[in-house]
Image (tube, rainbow, N blue to C red; front, side, top):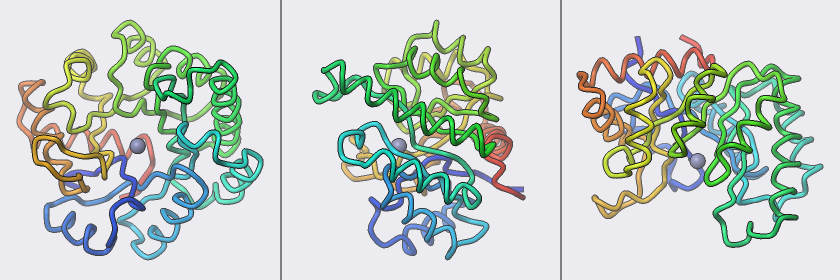
Length: 253
Ligand SMILES: [Zn+2]
């Protein structure tokens, strides 16, 4: 049985991947879900998964921050062509908080791309990892139009009202190291039942308290913060979150 899985990592941002994976293994992290944010980083995740079979599980997607930079047709083609090799479609979604996303036409472009990616996920029977910052309700409403086999609202820190709809729809949320300090994220994790929470680092996101970027070995920071919120033992939290990740992404035994 696995001890813990980091369910959301941007491996291309971490430099020496083999060293990072070595440290994760030493720390008792038994698998890593490597998401993609554009064609290049998705291809990187696929390559890494080939070299670390049974340890790195790849996701392919287009992050909303890339909406103006990628060729949408090419990105959708890439996801479709590689759907058979991946554990999920992700990271995909909407983000209205970026300065460049103030214009309605940019937001519409995000929604069109997100919808296209969800359509592929539904056709290929792949679960999705959704980025929904400042676009929580739109991200959910669009997702519900597609018959995807499952979804996680990654690092969800939005309204509790929308959280309830997310949970009612059968979807998951994920906890990140922000569970140590973010009021909104903590409120979500207190409200969501443990059997709907995954744990992750979103590496290489900077860890302010430690003054360095994160890597998968730091998923234990998330586990400990979440255990504190839930009043549970860290080992128990890690076990349940790991089972949730295995159920959602079908990362295999
Ligand atoms: Zn991410």
